[in-house]
Image 1 (cartoon, rainbow, N blue to C red):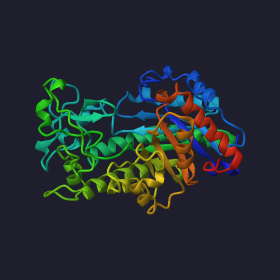
Image 2 (spheres, rainbow, N blue to C red):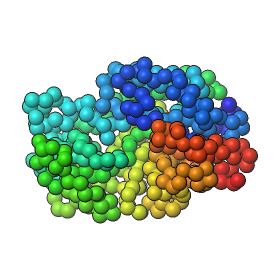
Image 3 (cartoon, rainbow, N blue to C red):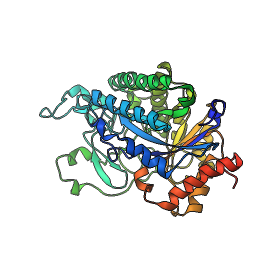
Length: 402
């Protein structure tokens, strides 16, 4: 175990457990000690290493039964302590909210949660609630349909998000505070947001509502044009959030409008977490950007938390990510994080090790969270690269020198 006075200099390589793959959060008993021990066998800690391995897990609070999710969280934390595993706890209310039709079902009286007023809680493709979405699309490897995305500025959505945070975060903090002094660093952090943005992880095809009752095989299949802001090559959304926020009520939607809404969203989540007692050094946002240098990157920065971003294109070297670097110049946080990271190059030891070491070469980078363990667990070159990165941090104290 690292000495307590060195813990603030510790960096982490965490592996995210793929949502609803390793563990069924609707069944707390599915979270098993063996799943932690598997990671520890493949990625063992090395005494004196500056870099420690660990695990990340996402807890979507609008997807699962409230009481069951709390039990799953407690089970996750219990086993983390028993196995001495550093963990990143990620709480999400953006990408998965299927379990709360009382917030989003505004159009179908035959299904649970129906209330026409729910138009105010979902996104729109124009300035009127008559243009509320019933459907959206996502592509995390393959295009599929999802429900309408939330209006991030809806008062009811925000109130319900706060309510869930006020339940889950105290569970995490109580666990952390009960740990003995030599185990306090098992809580790497708490993350809010999940690639927070509008119109990419839940986009809307023109006239998309008309497709709801048609087969998915008839859906358009063209790809987003992520460099074309603000609509990304499809129908722009974000009107509901921008209008609710009081930014504008007419005219053209702009890149700056959507970035500002996202910034307010992440700042609000961070404020609530901070007021619940999460120290800034333990609190991370999950920002993102697709077009080089776009304003959205800066939405991850606020005075309550440390910023984090997804790295795919620039996983080889975050210093080449202009949007992240511009945002970091505006941050006075103690850390930043490669909060979702996956190197896109060949699965070779040297290539992966260089990418890991380069990312961690900035000592303010607190962690890398690799998405996902299930995608790398059978790749011996990747596992060996992680092991070598950990071992190299003992030898030099600098992960960028080998």
